[in-house]
Image (tube, rainbow, N blue to C red; front, side, top):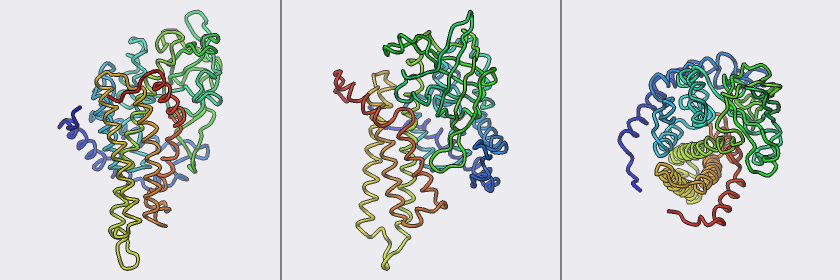
Length: 411
């Protein structure tokens, strides 16, 4: 395993940061009254205001125009195909530079890895159907959402109640999806439903994925779900009422939808771990800078051993997480099995970032609790990431099962 970072990755990261600093940051400053207040950024129903959506679309399309938006997507879909190692390097750099809570950066400059843009899940779509929407998705003009979770089926996907019934050359879907990222704003949806109840009850498949425009009759988003003190959200509930989808819009073979879904979910877990790693570095950098200038008892708090230990603990967490993440990404790029390792880095990184933000707030004292520094926003975000794309407990279950099945090496 080579730890050298190729020059082209560095150049890409440098260019991405320049774009954010020179084009996105001035836009954020110009519209700061709108973007920095959630009361203004969101409508009463929790959806983004049209002005915010227009700004996000503007940045998304500009990012695509410059070649950033699709750079991490699969080459077979028309993306840059940079690979897992490059992807985690770039996600880490972006988040370490930008920090948390930037409405025009996160999931905008680079899309969520499997719920938007040229999602790897789209590799399972009929090429003729993909051709009708690929350019719009690649340009950032249109967006996606990924509908797997339900009110009673999160980690336990086989508890899914949504059903798809064959009707000639179509499928008719009924059910409810919940916790669906970008659902309130998406132009297309990837929806998963039970197509064989017997197989699903036996946990042997029986779930199928479908691709459809959100304008399809019967598809609706009745509400959004604000979380962790926010006034609005990108997350929504999807209602499916006799939604008719052509069989040609299937995602992969009938009854094999969970394998299709995992194609995206694992990419999401890796990306989330990289984002957490970058955010943790941002929080540590803020803490180091503050510790050098904040004084107590006539000395910078950086001179106090209690503060030094908190900074050191953050560095230890970050170094361990980075080492695991780079190795896991290398395994993926080598085409080697990495299910256990993906679960390890997802659980480890999402728990690590919470510890780092907690210490960062402690180092800053009362200032760390203010909205001004964005540490509290990062702290709230850090608490959320232990749940989506498989909870920490589900990751541990996966790790344990792989160990008990004989996968006890860490090559």
